[in-house]
Image (cartoon, rainbow, N blue to C red; front, side):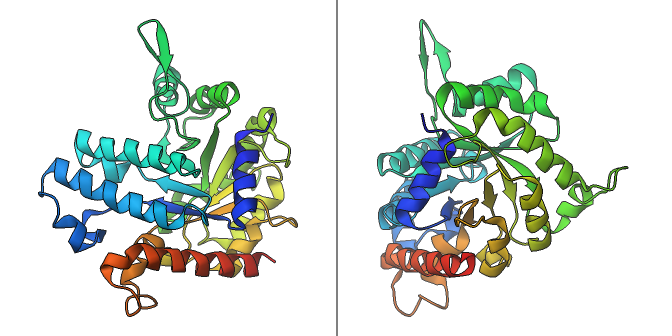
Length: 308
């Protein structure tokens, strides 16, 4: 049986595109013509987000293998925002896309299990167990150690899901903790990468990669290369491309000789392509989906060229 990472890899190969589209819908990003359709209430904002996200998915589902909704941009609108999150995830899956819920959870014991039940596993309701959000992957913070990760790994085994665990993040202050050197001379991010390799041994699939995967930022190519050397069975989710300054040639360090090993996240550069200098003179805001599709193709070709 193929594991969750095999399924993602085959979707990447099918689309020839190692890209995941981040869906982080700030209200002001949404084209004005959509916002004008709805009241500026929590319910109205939720409906605008759903329409915006569905248009983005419709424009790209055949050329981008996965989406990554960041839950904070939905939680900030309360229950209505979470309805938008749920509908976005369901719609993307209906269109055949892999869904990576960017939730960055990191707690222990029954709390970790409850988080995992919500996103990867099932929740007991009466005499039945039901899937709640039922996404394919989640992001996790490993700061509390294996106690905070094991419930998710157990559900990955049981339900054929996957996790992306923070190793070296793309933000400027990540080095305050992640680059600290241990007594043996290793940086913390190398230690975490080695732990992931160990934790992921039970979930290695047909392509040699585990469903226990890593988040490694594009903005630190040297560290990306170092982590790849110690994490041969670990797939990378690579944020930081585009708006954060990560370049395609830097990202290539995360890939193997078969052009596998990473999936590159872009959020603003895809979602707001219609506002960019590259596409704003070609497309109106009503055609934002077409602009996103063109930018997705441009990004795909640039990445594939660099990875070669």
